[in-house]
Length: 117
Image 1 (tube, rainbow, N blue to C red):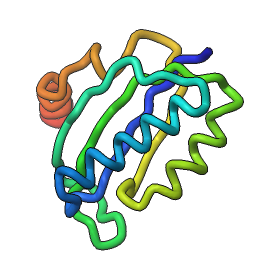
Image 2 (cartoon, helix red, strand yellow):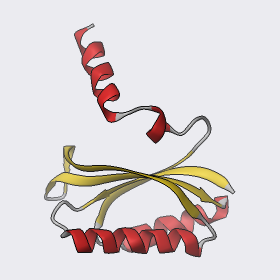
Image 3 (spheres, rainbow, N blue to C red):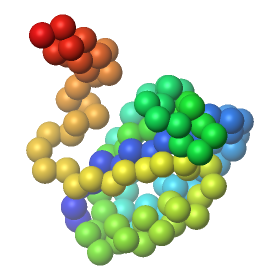
Image 4 (cartoon, rainbow, N blue to C red):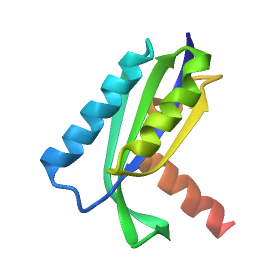
């Protein structure tokens, strides 16, 4: 089992029940491939840097997932079928968990500080 970080952007127009349904389906797909979502970080609705289709906002969730390496391709195919997900990224975790190591507010402060330099 490898550790992965799964970043998902859902359509902002989804009702709460539809968003929860899409995320439940995603979790079932992860479990189908002998994986497990160990941690979930909800960022909520945020503005997108660049529009995705007609969307200028998205609902962000970052998951830590334990998954066999050979299941990543199948997970990718399953995510692409989910209509509620407008963008996703799966990265292999090498070091400490990025989603927990840095809080969103700290990241914004770092970006502002570097922009001033």
